[in-house]
Image (cartoon, rainbow, N blue to C red; front, side):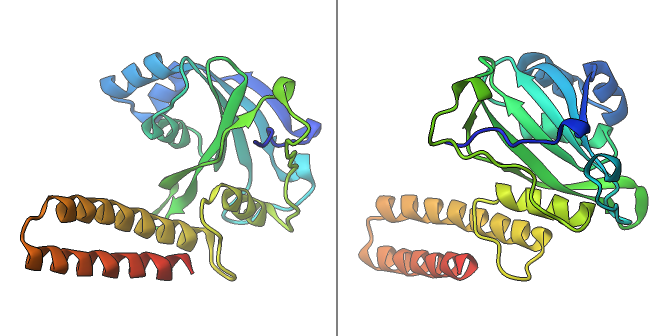
Length: 228
């Protein structure tokens, strides 16, 4: 089990973000507000990763990356809650999500980019979630401590941070957006495979069962190609 990543002291921001500000800037529905009340204890703007705090240049796409710490009332957070915070804050965000006990957490992020037809709006991809890690007080001798990856600019840093969250290896020369699209395709195929397995199990006719198994095998081959 890993430990929280180490961020530079110079990047510390440490300001509580009121939930009503998130509601206001994300046009949150009544249902979404209810999820915030049920799941979120506190939202803390923990770090600002910027040219001033990291001494690396910004790019036209990425000027800063914000680290937002979300303390939960339980142990789970809905992706729609994270997306509302993403839509309310006009910068790429890395979420540090902590369970109610404060002893364990994980990182989460989407690939967030400016909309092609409106640079004032942002588009969020599928959310990536890291493995669970222990808090600093609960570290073991086997804990892996990670600092920030080396990068020539803010955009490369963002790509490398997101790559850490991928559950599949990133291919050489593959962009983070392409890797996430490939992951989504794999997950869609996994759902299809689960459905076909149920059909195979329930099917009584031999010929139909053979055909379903053939289709199941084809789906597995598609996944293997995407994982290669």
